[in-house]
Structures are given as C-alpha cells and as structure tokens.
Length: 252
Image (cartoon, rainbow, N blue to C red):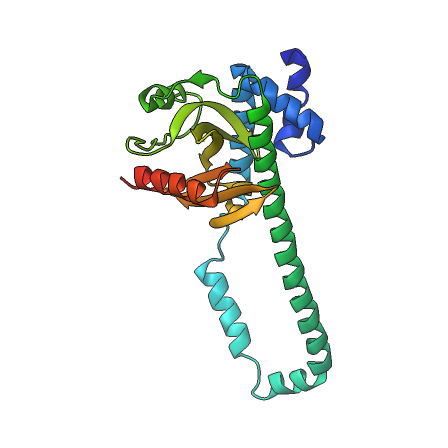
C-alpha cells in the first residue's frame, strides 16, 4: 500500500482499533517508512499528553477544608443512627466492591497476558522473516548508534566478551503502539530477542519477573524509565543471564 492509504489508518492504529492483520501490516510498513513511523509516534505522544493532562487535577486545600468542616458539623450519634438503618445495604455494597475488585484484577491479568502474547508473536514472526534485523552487526558500537534519531530514548548494550552470546543486529518495532528497539542475539543456535522501550501505557502492565508464554521463556523488568523484555526458546537460565547483562549495562 502507498503512504496515502496508510495515513487513513494511523489514527485507528494509535487508538488500538485496527484489526490484527491490518495492525501487523501497518507495523511492517512503518519499519521501512520513516515518514509514517514518525507520524504514528507524533500522534502517540499527543494522545499521551492529553491523557496525562486529564490526571493533573488535585483537590485544593480549600476544598479539603470545606469537606472536613461538613463532616465535623454532623451531630454526635447521627452517624451511628444512619449506620444502623443502612447496615444491610452497606453489606451489599461491600460485596459488590469486593466482586468489582476481583474483576479489576482479572482484567489486568488478561491485559498483561495479551501484551505477552503480542511480544511472543513479534519474536516468532521476526525470526521467521527473511530480514529479521535492519542493522546487521555484532559490534554494539555499530548497532546502538543506528537507533539514534529513530527512538525517543537511548539505551546501552552489554559487553559480551567472555560469554556465549553473540549480537546479530537490531531493528525498530512497535509494541503496544510504543516505538521500541528489537535486538537479536544468538546462543548455541538459539535466537534471543531483547526489546527495549519506554515503560509507559500498556507495557507497565507487565510488571517484573520471569514467565513462559507460547513455549517461550520471557523475563521483563523496568529500569531507569525503560522497559526491558528478553524472550527466547532457549533455556530459562540463558534468558536470565542475558537479562542480568542488560541490567548491569543499564545500571552502570
């Protein structure tokens, strides 16, 4: 498709309203089209700014004081009489609130699982691609500068000397509509994907820890405002060792 046709779909992509196949196709197009990827990034930043602005209201000291005076002005005992009449209803409300809390936890768990499935799909489809990386190099001093100007953040790559890991290269991808760096490593004929992105919006749902998804081992954490995700079909130990190398490089 031409850029003109894709431009009509970028807003739907940013809002998460595209069908899965269209989203994948647009994501593939943006990997090779700087204009569309920058357009999508700009709209994501605008949406995030509006979202953040909506959370900036805080009750003033005057409002808090007025509420405190209204509570203190109630006659002694009035609250208890009100409580006796409403006790059965309050019990029902408590049950509803508990059920609501359980529902919220379930939704968050499902959202986290969906993000992990998206990452597993990205890892598998990228390795199946004829061109899994756009910058091909085992030199971190070549791969890291390639991302400059393509991502709104910078990151460090670990030193691999003395390890069995080898850097194969990297490319820019989108995860939860966040621009991210995807780095590909190898160890004993296995490929490992390392995704680095800003730790915002949907990626914050991942939390920290190790898990398995679609037969892949996955480890994720947040460090200095960045989200790191290491995923592979190699051993859990290999994934953890590479994750520790990234933690060390990010903390140095």
